[in-house]
Image (cartoon, rainbow, N blue to C red; front, side):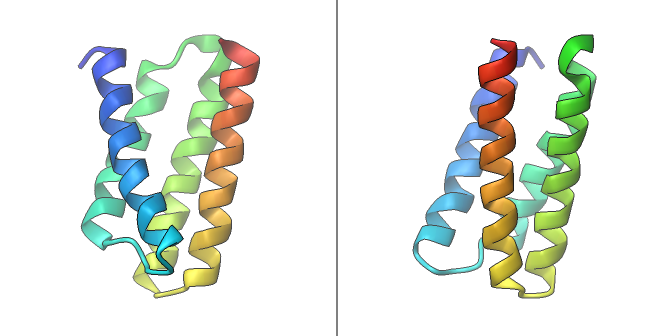
Length: 95
């Protein structure tokens, strides 16, 4: 998978997650599982200069999935904020 296609897929799934959270609902586990799968691919596609950030992002994706499995909405919201911050930092630093 090329990086642009990957990024479009990841952003689409992440939008589904944030829309659920914005509606005060837990995201669907299937959606979070797909997000986690895609996030775990990121370190394999990352350049050496930002591989650490990609690994951190994948770890946060795993954590949000685990929190949702426990129906811990508060933690899901916090982790979604952390994912958003991580993305903004990476894009600002490495673009």
